[in-house]
Length: 78
Image (cartoon, rainbow, N blue to C red; front, side, top):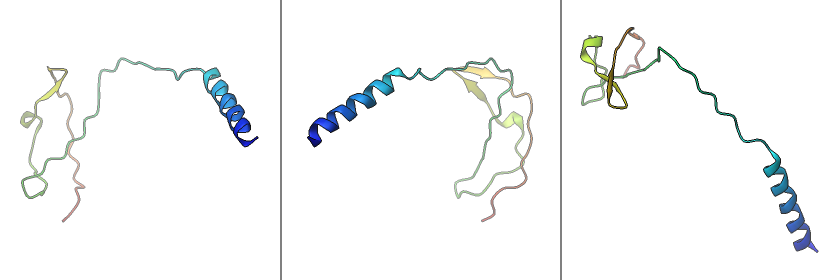
């Protein structure tokens, strides 16, 4: 009896799962993406005084232009 009830329950769950709509995919075209970078030396200490000229940014093998850069002065202290 328990085996039959378990099979019925599994069938009900399977039917309910198949009745749900698949998740939607949203695609957008953006012109600006935030890229957060932390640079450390071989001992793990933060490296400062870097500018956008110190970086190359590539996406799918194509170089991307770095249009803005800011410096986060709140780095973790060791």
